[in-house]
Every structure is written in C-alpha cells, then in structure tokens.
Image (cartoon, rainbow, N blue to C red):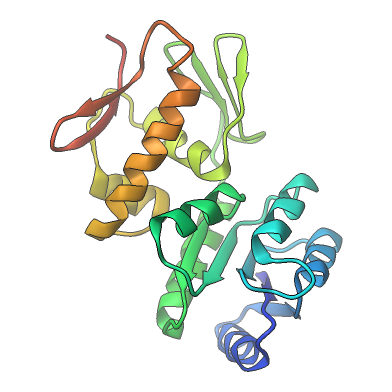
Length: 223
C-alpha cells in the first residue's frame, strides 16, 4: 500500500512517515500543496493524507485540484479546525475524512486502515431503487434519466441508503458506516448531509425517497 503525505511541518511529516512505514506502508512526502497535487497526479496512491494549512496551495484547493484531475484515492484531511462548518468545507472539497490536530498515531492509523480498506473494496454491479440508479464503478447517480452531481461524501451516504433500502438507519449506524465514527457531536454533520442529499435527490421530483424517522434517523423508501 502506497500513501502520500502532504504536510509542511517537517516534524509532523517525519512522525507520520516513520509510523506508517513501521506498519508496512510505502510513504511519499510533499511539503506544499502544489507538490502534493503534482505527486498525486503522477503516481497511484491508496490514500492521501492532506494537511489543510499548506504553502503555495492550501489543502482544500489541492484536494479539489486532485479530484478535477480524476484522482480517486481516498483523502484524509489533517486540520487544526474542528467546527461543523470547517469539517463540512473539507468534506465538500472532495476529501473522505478528517482528523483534528493534535492526534495520537493509533487514531491516525485506524482512520488510514478504514479508508484504505474502503477504497480497495470492490463494490460490484449497479444498484437500483425506485427510479434511482447508482453506478459504483463510475461513482455516478441517476434519478430517472437525470444524472445527479454529488460530492464524495454525499455519494457515500446515498450508497449506504441504497444498499439498505426500506431500513431505518440510525445516526449512529450512518456515522459508523459512512464516516467510521460513533460519537454524538457528529450527528449535526449527518443531518447537514442528509439535507444536502435531499435537495439533490428529492427536491425536483414529485416522489420523495429520503424520509425522517423522528427521534431515530432516516430511511430510503417509496410512499
């Protein structure tokens, strides 16, 4: 497994590199956003660790640039910011997860393994429910004949719904399966993302598919 670490603080980068190499990963390091984008597009990585505050190009811009260049490797953002707004901004840039500094290496390693496992897992054939269609290889969604543009996290959330149709999904279940987390403060972000998803999947269509189960969570079903 090959990982790219984009981090301008030399001590932090060295700490991460030594730890990951000790776990058997191959690690490349870039010290600014532009170099990170260059390495990320030139090589194939199983995961990219991206600091947010970087010289030359900030981490969120670097993630967007990588996604625009069709780099599909999972991205774990490292940030000193931990408000809901900052986290949502990071996930909307195309990153898959975030970790707040300072962090223990054990926690970083758990996140890395979860993202690498998810990224390498073959998802299989198309999934359909009602007039929704999901292509897990191309990461595309259609409702009827209309293609719906989703961010990486919105896509992961909808895929979880579509793999568990007509099943009430609690916020804890969603946190564990879509974000690999299980803590109460994360439910705000889940609600934010369900609202984002509803605007794209349901708002312009007469039949609503994503429903709230009061006090519990959400369910994908036809009514």
